[in-house]
Image 1 (cartoon, one colour):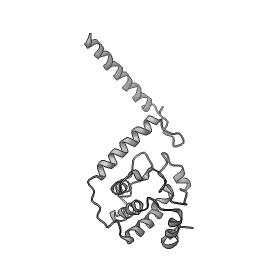
Image 2: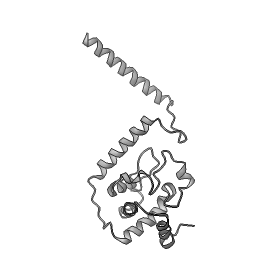
Image 3: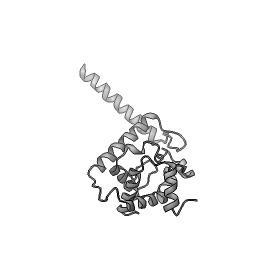
Image 4: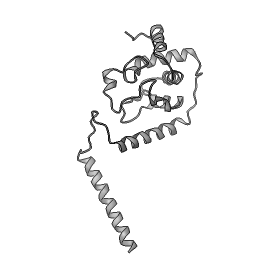
Length: 176
């Protein structure tokens, strides 16, 4: 009797796996950036990404002085060049490209970007995150530039619009 119930459960699991595989293989799952994933898919992707980021960044050592003004300014400049288009900034909206990404990138500094530590921010910036639109800058940028961005973001968690404007006025070559 128990063996019969066990066989039925195994058969049911096999049928569900085959049905799910066919659903995906036949292109029935909508990957459009215009339509959100079901909540369960969002939760699974976010949970996987968060755990991976935390695990991969845990062993990193911060090789720079996080209070170094030059690193902060370098990070601001790098952020202006590489990041503001998608993440925006205080008083600066993301570009149309950034607004068209799904899932939407965290808006600096207002959203959940800061559930991440300095080391997490470095790791994400260097390695990117699959299926989010976040590119990996490790292949194209030196670690020093990536650490500078991470330091800038980490130290700017409460940056106001006026403070960001002052940084742009003083250090930016890209603002209008």
